[in-house]
Amino acid sequence: MTDTSKILNEMNERSREVFRRVVEGYLDNGEPVGSRTLTRTLSEKVSAATVRNVMQDLEFLGLLDSPHVSAGRVPTQLGLRMFVDGLLEVGDLSAEDREHLDSTMGGGNDPTSLLDRVGHALSGATHGASLVLAPKHEAPIKHIEFVSLGPDRALVVLVFADGHVENRLFSPPLGQTPSSMREAANFLNALAEGRTLSELREVMKTEITRRRQEIDSLARDLVESGLALWENEGEGTERLIVRGRANLLGSEAEEEDLERIRTLFDDLERKRDIQEFLELTQSGEGVRIFIGSENKLFSLSGSSLVVSPYMNADRKIIGAVGVIGPTRLNYGRIVPIVDYTAQLVGRLMSDRSQR
Image (cartoon, rainbow, N blue to C red; front, top):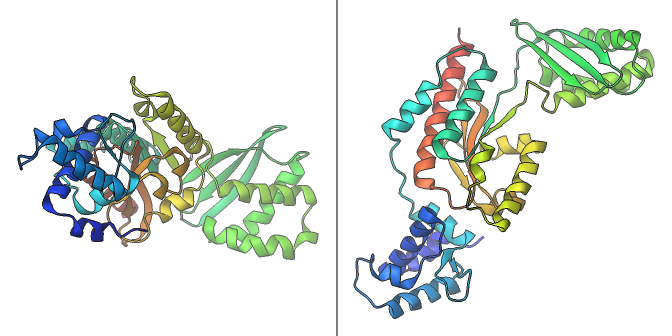
């Protein structure tokens, strides 16, 4: 990848200011910025022709692009990356935004409803779509039970040692009977006691193979499909909470934007690569910004993602919060909002676990 800091360091003051003004203008209104507009705002009095020459140089460096023949310039993905890394001025969290986020933290202590409120608050404050990755429940398992709801629907009930209960709907393999469901539950319960879901998964990988003869094939299929379910989101227990999709559908969205947003919605509906979403934050504390195709989860949609992990009382990363939207996000305002939200959620989760 091109070293943007090296390019920035080699630019003179005039080039740097022209570049910064183009990016800021584009982030403000989404429109290409022309040389005549810039001559009115630059600190140095220069002609429009001089500004055009500077813009052509910046285009040659791959930092700007001209979407139409006679239009002004817009930043490229490389240009946005250089701006974010070297020129972005991150503001302080406004009192209004702080109050808005703080106000959502009242109410019940149920983590699902808490994180849902956080998602709505984050999308409302940023006018983007919010992503909140909920932590896994890692208490030891006390009991597992399968309940048939019909030929193609079943419920797995997970009772944890701390009293937490999760009900997860899933589609069982065909042909399940009450006896195969009991056998599957008995098999799992014999292995599950005292283990967390993550630990049970590891044990199951070997036990289901080693003890194939001890368990009926129908029950074995049910156990394996149950384990597949636990790797993904269940209804009512989704790990990736997405709120504010409508914010991405502005009234002035062009057809190209709508296609990008449809692609993004498809990705979000599938909630794919949840683990990768968390891995985006694992390299360290604080907010990270992924622009366009740098964001491997939603690269097809060309969207930007501003994301931060949140931690428990032991300083272990247990989840993440983020905002996704077009590449012309107001990064300077959104970064402190995401940062504050992550710290807020981390404190609340820590307080809850210590009660």
